[in-house]
Image (tube, rainbow, N blue to C red; front, side):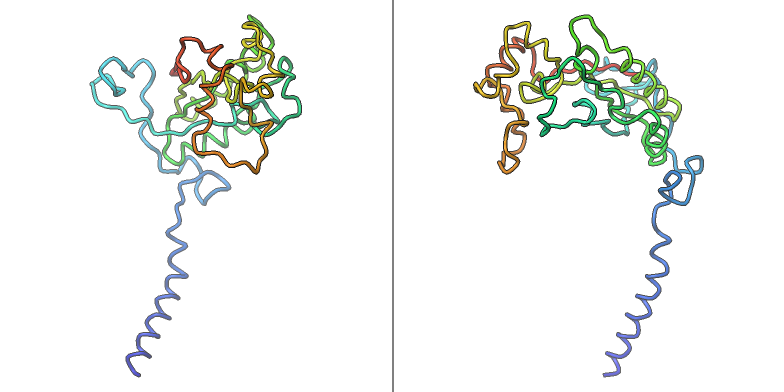
Length: 249
């Protein structure tokens, strides 16, 4: 019995100490409002290699000026950039209003950029893959560029640079466009090859999530099955379905 009493006492004391001590082990390398330290006091990673110092001509790895492998520590920014503001894959309203869309504030409002980048830098991250779609840049028509979005994009990159974060601008697409079951290209690219975006899903020429019940369960990576439907094959032609051109800034 005495052994049980001792064990119970030790467990009680240990629990009491843990309740007091464990909270002090919580990480403090966060920005204002997310921890107890400011960004200037945070644990920071080494500075990101500058664009002119980064080499990509020596095999599969990025390398610095000394030939050492460079590991890019960062995050994807962000999946929300695949769709215009106030929209998502399940939203049908305005789905065919293709010329008047805006991607300004994708991935986040410029006013919030400092908060996001400061938090990433405080976590030791110095790199972001910044998604940009063709539709965001040229949705109105061939040669008609969204200057407001381009100005916003430049401002976001400059904000990132101010926090010591490099950006890899990714002109991104999945399965060509939103009207062929993915994202990327503007609607007029389908029009120029003779496809009517309003009839693609109903005719089986494309699979768009906007017109599928949310109760339907699909296998993982189902989106890549869309590459085999007519609309995607027609516009992609001989191009790789998931080809990217990266710009490091």
